[in-house]
Structures are given as structure tokens and as C-alpha cells.
Image (cartoon, rainbow, N blue to C red; front, top):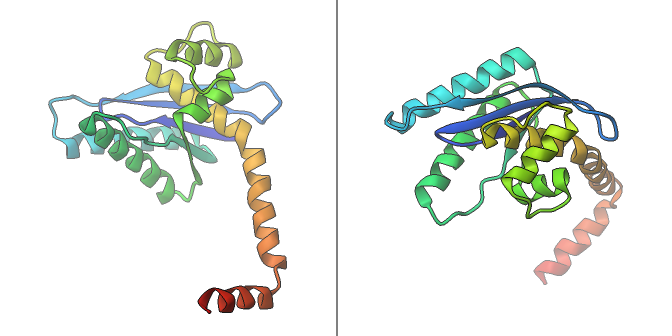
Length: 187
């Protein structure tokens, strides 16, 4: 499985590509940051992020894209920029028909370090160890993107089994049961 991890940001958008399967050693294929100038208009910055992500998609041909789920922050302008960069990553993936998975920061930290409250240094240290790198990727956005990809590779098998079980349940549920529940709910 080859996953492009995206740590969205308007100034620095972390990008990392990891290949492997759960339970086996993983391999980093690339890591970097798409940067945009803070003084540029937001629309122009989003175009630069889109071009950067498209280049990574062209070069590495991932099967999945894992994006950090935007969560509420006190600084509205920061969360808006993060959400906009996140949307660009999802759009680029959707254009290519690539599945997109959203992972919260605590899910990623827990998957990589064992603690959902780990700090940036702990994440960087574990990414370095898991991918057998000489040093933690810099800046932290790059390490976070790799952590997203690792998290997705490790979580995908369980998520896929859950989705298959739900789909199988829906297929085997008797149609009259659904009708009875609907009629009961409207009474």
C-alpha cells in the first residue's frame, strides 16, 4: 500500500509518502513541504499548494491519500487556512479517484507513539525510528505528514474489515425489517 500523507497548512503543507503493509517494515518514498509566501493572496497560495500536491501525486502515484482532519482551534484564521489547504488535498485526490482518509491529530499520535497526547518531538522521533531514518524530518510538518501515512497504513486493515461488515449486514438485512422499522417510527 502506498499512501500520501498531507499535514495541511497554508504556509507549510507537509507531504510524505510511505509504502508498506501493517505488521511489516515500512519504507519512506519521499518527504517534503509545499511552502507559500505569507504575503501572497490566499487564492494564489491555494493554487501553489494544489500544484505542489499534484506534483507529488504525479511523481509517487499513491493508492490512498491521508489528510489530517481539521479540528477547532482558538485562532480562526489558522483553522481556516488549514481547512482550505485540507480541501485542496482532498480535491486533488478526488480528481484522480483516489480514496481519502481523514485522521485526527490524536489518532495519528496514538498510532505512531502509543499516546494521543504525544508532542511533536515524540512523533518525529517515532517516525524516524519506524522508517529507519538517520534524523527526524524537518520541519515538523514533514514528520507529521509521514505519521499520517503510517497511521493510515496501520489503521486501514481494521477500517476495511469494519466497512465490509457493515456492508454485509446491510445486504443481508431483510427488506421487510426496514419497512417495519420505518412504519413503527412514523406511528
